[in-house]
Length: 494
Ligand code: HEM
Image (cartoon, rainbow, N blue to C red; front, side, top):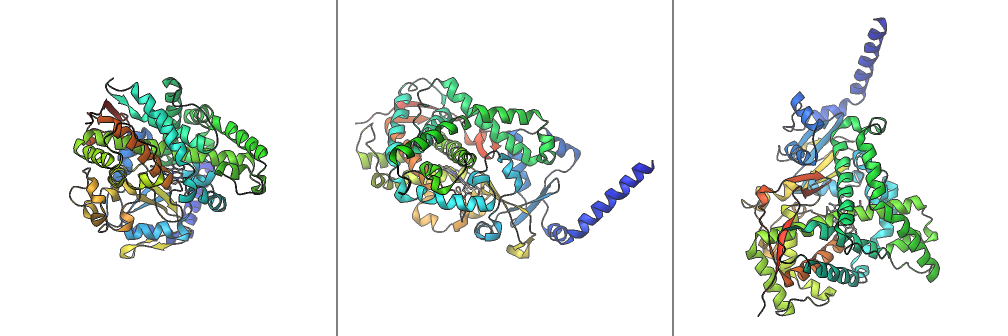
């Protein structure tokens, strides 16, 4: 009895001290509008049992309140969704908001530039930046063209065979491409579908586990998480999936470096820079960086191009406009020629289609940051230091106030120069913006344009799916739980 009373006494003292020490934090948090997040036992039960599909709806609800900002407590953590483009600009460019909350670092198995701490991020980002710049990407365009040609060969087997989930083909292409960019040649696109599917399913499981951990605060503690089935699943998927490639990628890059003896020259690819002894990275660091880039590059690009094809299959009028543009540039042909940078830059309408795809279905629907100092946003709201600032990209991209009453519709024309000039600059942020903007945005755009131009020249794409019926799930990225079902038929040309 006495022991219980003493225990309660100390707990009360501990809690009171915590609130006293952090009184400013709680005072400022109190002023931020509360979301409609359901804190009842029912709500907690829903989170407890949620999978990626339910989490997608829970997250949307959580930040769908006030026009400036909305808070949601997840355990002891204050999440605040910031929705006004001018506030998003402030957050994404503030040197006090560069870090990511620890919840996003659950993938600390892969520190890399996406998940590592700020010092780590800064030095790696500086090293990698030039390799993803416009000039260097010119050397990568031949790889994109060659890999897309393999995709086109494989599409011949799918033609006229009815619906298929194009995501599998896209993932195989994006994975094979990023590995080749890292000087590692492996044939993934031509492998049996079971091998490809297993890799994709592993990756999706890994991303789902990270997402579930964010929403279940007790799983933030490694000591609890490590006792769960999810932890064992995570170990398994990491062993079975892309991480398997990384050892071979590193060894291959080291061999190449030795053969070329170019230690003192500027490295040709970012993998050669990473393994170059002059930078002194450990194998573990290189492994983390490679896995991070693979993770960031592969799922995202595959989702975006699959979504674009699905939407084009649903909107034949838009598809026809893309084809008209392609015929204007390449003539009435079924086979796209080699697409160099100049040709790719002429594909204006196709670019508008890709932009509209990523507006309507942003691959990364939420960005998380943590602020090291208080930051003031519109209407005098102050986000206290250590807030998990959330940028709900999906809500911003679908805002009727910004995009008009048809914000939920697929209309690429909103991205023509005249219309887009009227949109606030931080209202369209599929790749984020600011110093932590996606390093691979140019890479992704070039690859998507080459893929889509090749596919659409040769094939008429059809999809029976309707956007309003697509069941999206949150796996860090936003993807369709039903897959991306399309059918293809060879186009008739005069
Ligand atoms: C359609 C395709 C893609 C989309 C929509 C996308 C989106 C994003 C977004 C929104 C972020 C910021 C995440 C955050 O701040 O939490 C990000 C970061 C990043 N992306 Fe991408 N990405 C794509 C493709 C790629 C590709 C192809 C690569 C590499 C080849 C890549 C590499 C990275 C890396 C390394 C980061 C971390 C940057 C940093 O923190 O400094 N991404 N991406």
